[in-house]
Image 1 (cartoon, helix red, strand yellow):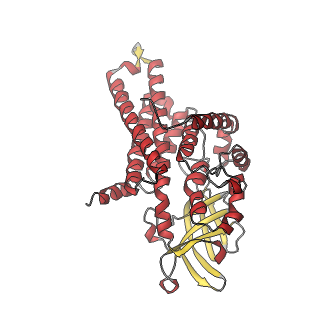
Image 2 (cartoon, rainbow, N blue to C red; image 1 turned 90 degrees about the vertical axis):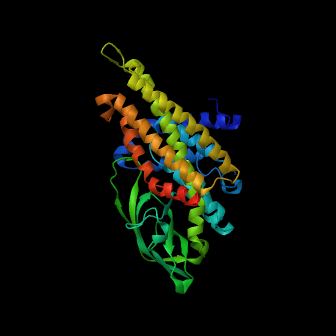
Length: 379
């Protein structure tokens, strides 16, 4: 079905993104997987092409493009080219909105130029050893002291935690200090801040993921994002775009899986005929192809809703859980059709299969996503 989501400017942007990734990312896949992180020079090069922080105002080096269709183009081309790492979605979709929406003009002037240039790596620290999808269970604390706030606690599963220069840390504020949650910006050089292990994951090996520790870290009032006490509201407000981002990636990966499985089904033979001609495979791919087509139309509509400020938390949660389940099913089917070759690291489908598994976990587990949708039904 023909897509109607994009305009000519998005098509031109897509050509730029694809050319850049083919030249600057694809040749380094193995290197980055081995190193456990994407090279910092890649991000400055990507920023020079206008692929980082383009939603920021022009006065800070951005393009003022708060149009999620540009974000979607990057995700689709990252998938299409097999690029590794989550830096684009983390920076453009998840963390940057905090600096755009609740940072003061003074804070934006200090932080946005470096973010947009790719020289300042950013991350957000919400998850803790005993706290994942339930943000209300955060135990890290921030207490008022002379000149600011004293931050204590630990975080885990923090994407880009090893490389990050600025980290937004979510912490609980004691009732004596007003209660609620706050968002505190900690720089790499803060006294009392330490990085823990670079975590060894079963997938997404090129993306650095870390433990972070905060012991009596003094955060100045000028480094607090938004109003203390409203942190949970800020985080919940940004989760819809984060989950939409995951849905965009999921549909693109599912499309890749179906296309790859069809091509392999025509090429590979068993018992003297292409394996795609066997009814079991043909029916499976027919069903998957139809489901992916339905997902594409729905997610494109979600992108339009996001641009219009109309995407609800329940719609984003539904998009996230349904498309990521479809993504893994499609990749698993594609791997199965490749037989033993699909289990070999030299085949791209193997990496994509293991990389996709976490999509059903991070950004809120799919079980929590179903709970959000269920509650929206009044149940």
